[in-house]
Image 1 (cartoon, rainbow, N blue to C red):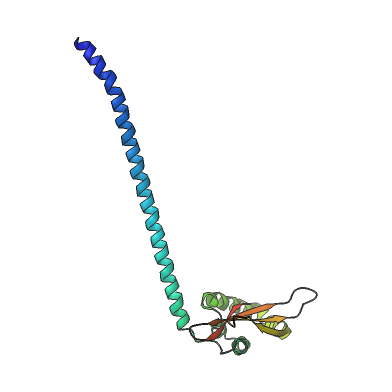
Image 2: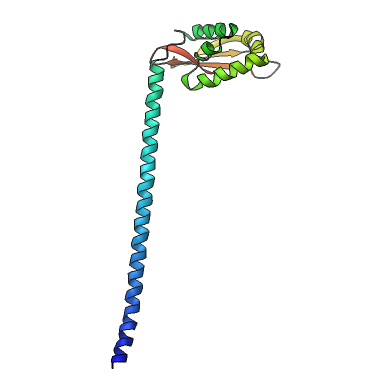
Length: 170
């Protein structure tokens, strides 16, 4: 009889063990997914905080950026004058904050390669006009068609913190 009891206990314990294993495995999966979700949520929060910090830094930089004119035409004149003088540092300051370093580097290369002379002597004289956008916060200078191809458009935007005009696109 003892042997039959052992067989019954073993037979009954196998499903119980399997159920326990299933629940332990399911619980472990739940905990892992919860951990991964928490980890992903924290990464998202960290990313959002970093973006907010960068946006604050950018806003502060724009609040301190007084290089530029009161009109798009004045900013353009200041920019061209700085380029003609070979002052790449000053010329780059007439661009939006995000592009200043890139443009400074490009101007240095342009001076070294001679492309700056071409830009000043051949491209800029082609400007035939400019238009203010309806919101009065963006202005574009444009050139006539060049050899049957499209002309150039130079876009300036208003820095709302300092009310100075900055070059956005060349």
